[in-house]
Image (cartoon, rainbow, N blue to C red):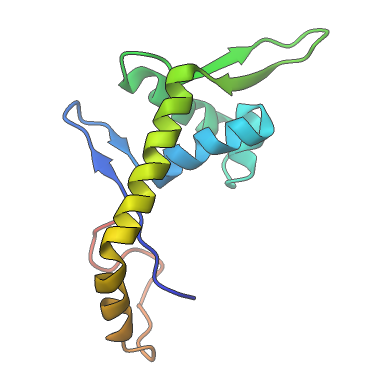
Length: 127
C-alpha cells in the first residue's frame, strides 16, 4: 500500500466537503440510486439518505434529485450543480495530489514500517 492524500474542506457554514461525500455523489452517478450508492460504501440506506440530504442542504442549489418509484422505478441522479460539484472535487483532489506528490513521497519514505497503531481510531485525532 502506498500513501494516499485525501482532501477535506471545512466550509464557513460549518459543513465539510470531503472524500465520503464526493464518493457518494460519484456512486449515485454510477448506480442511479442513493440506496445502491451507499451500499457500495458499506453504509445503511438511512445513513446514505441523510448524507445526500446534507449535501443538498449545504449549498444554495441541490446536488441530487430523486425520482419516486412506480412503473419506471425510483432512483436518484445529480443535478447540473451536483455534476459540477463532483467535477470540482475530483479536480481539487487531483491537483492537490500532483502538487504534493514529492512531499508525500518523502513522508512515506520516512515511515517506520514496523510501527503499528494501537487502536482502530485515528491516533492523532486528525480524521
